[in-house]
Length: 73
Image (cartoon, rainbow, N blue to C red; front, side, top):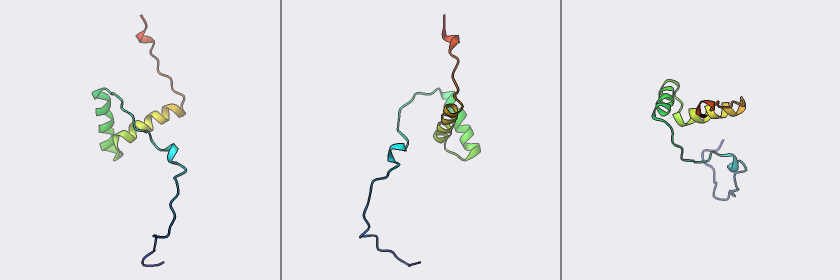
């Protein structure tokens, strides 16, 4: 292994996975929801936004549907 490498002649190229990267969105969450995930983040050492993303991804994989029948009159 060389002590130094000359990268000045290296050609750049587009990231083929860039379209699969995370998308930034603004979402309004209840304070209790944010606190819940922040507490879990402290316990696990994983950032709370990542935990929310992991939970939502798990909902997708498990095909979970929310029951909002309580909202009906």
